[in-house]
Figure 1: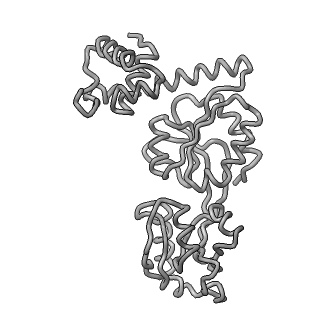
Figure 2: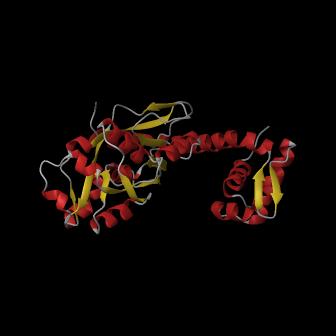
Figure 3: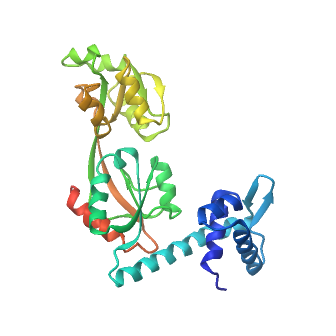
Length: 301
């Protein structure tokens, strides 16, 4: 049984957005058109794909079973179009990349700038999210490549080439904090301070707690916990709280003199990001531009 792309696109959009109206807006279509596509697909399959209710539409058992295949078909169709463009010598298509904040504010801008210089017509979509969200996005084909410190969980993956990018997480404080004058800075003093850190369960928070325990210390008091990197930096700059973030995210505050890195090498964490793709399914031809850019900007193991 053959399905038109429009039918599957409408189905996937309604599944994602929960209403025909929002799906139509995302597809730059109309509500009657999207509704017609859904009814046509349901008629072809002989199954109801959605439960309709006042708040919107939710997938039925049949719809939930169809969704992964629909996403795969749409993804492969997009890749086929990009491959045909590549054969014709057209440097266009879509490249979808994901990374945590340290990636999107660290090395990724340089890499993507090199991509756009080589392929100015290429559309690049970037997802900035937590590592667990990135794993899910790779699994559901929302992105083609993610940069991660470990192989993604929940999806079979493989590395994209030998490329890697280093990142150093450091403790920091306000420029006026008297701890700056203590040299050497005793780890016990740091453990006695109050900190601003990412939320519990976030990867940086977990690594901070593991590092502190490995040093034989108790996890210090956390006065502020948030997913906002900017908020952590701004609060630390204006208070006695200490922070622990990738040094690349501190560039503006260090440059303005508002914050300073604390000299505590034992409380630093060097991490390495590597690019990963799904191990199965097609890899977009547009990814070659990313691979070439990574070769010019990365470190090899």
